[in-house]
Image 1 (cartoon, one colour):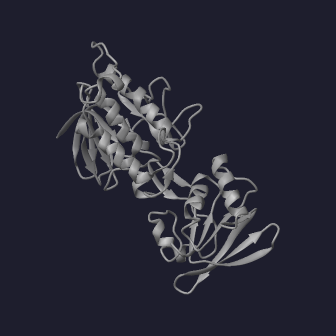
Image 2 (cartoon, helix red, strand yellow; image 1 turned 45 degrees about the horizontal axis):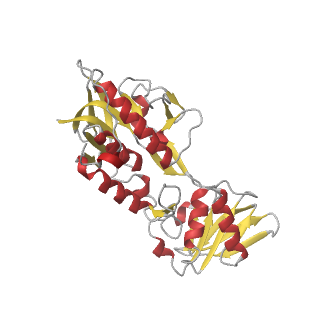
Image 3 (cartoon, rainbow, N blue to C red; image 1 turned 30 degrees about the horizontal axis):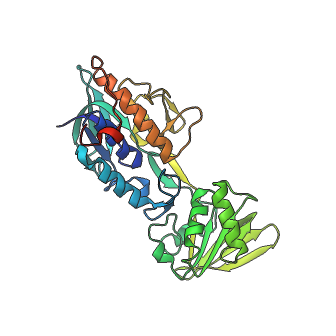
Amino acid sequence: MINTDICIIGAGPVGLFAVFEAGLLKMRCHLVDALPQVGGQLSEIYPQKPIYDIPGFPSIQAQQLVDNLMEQIAPFKPGFTLGERVEHIDRMENGDFIVQTHEQTSIQAKVIVIAGGLGCFEPRKPAINGLEAFEGKGVSYFVKNPEAFRNRRVVLSGGGDSALDWAIFLAPVASELTLVHRGETFRGAPDSAEKVVELAHQGKIRLLLESQITDVAGNGHLQSLSVSTKNQGNLLLEADHLIPLFGLTPKLGPIANWGLALDKSAIEVNVDDYATSVPGIYAIGDINTYTGKLKLILSGFHEAALMAQSAFKYVYPQQKLSFKYTTVNGVNAF
């Protein structure tokens, strides 16, 4: 039996930062994640994707952010159970929780923090004829290694932040890069959209707006795709790779059976401290929902800080919480 103050379900960036905030209050943490490594979506789906909205970093690769977070929490010596999915949560008579994984690992904790990102997730697949036949043969839904696309003909499809970010990143990597978007304007960050439009004006990206990919074809590997456009009719594009980027479909999995108040596929929380409807259980990051929710890593970091303060008061109601600034005391002083 593993014993800890806080059991954090999910070892993505928000779960990792929660260790830091809890550590400042001298609370021990143990993290559980179904993935075999820490980092969540950042490490599993797009480790080399650039991230632009982390304070103090004009741009940082996803995996580098994870590595930095691991270095930041190292002084607090958190425990990890990786490659195991949490199946059950039970409450003991003394109020502690017993968390049990599908591999029968048991963790006793005073507080549970669910930081599971989108929960179990899978890519949203567009309705393109023949798409699944070329999965792994030119069609991929994530960019793990940008070098795999060097000097190749690449087509991106989508209009959100991921499509824009990868268009900017892969423009100097691919021999030909085309971005296909069914809308007239983008859903992503305006600054990224401006950069993509400018790259198109410079001839570094082929931009097809109000367009949709209808078919893919090839002989054992993707070779071409058909695009229906509003202004140019039907086009046939030669391509080595197609990367549809339409986001992820969230699935809560076992979390849906834990008695928490839910709103569709998200956990409802109190915005004062991100507590769920079950006392002693908190939810932070993309997995929670509340009025004004922004699914940003930055927002998750904020939620982790407030959660830790509340968790301390929950576990030690008689103790006075003395908050100290790390700029004065440093980390090792806590």
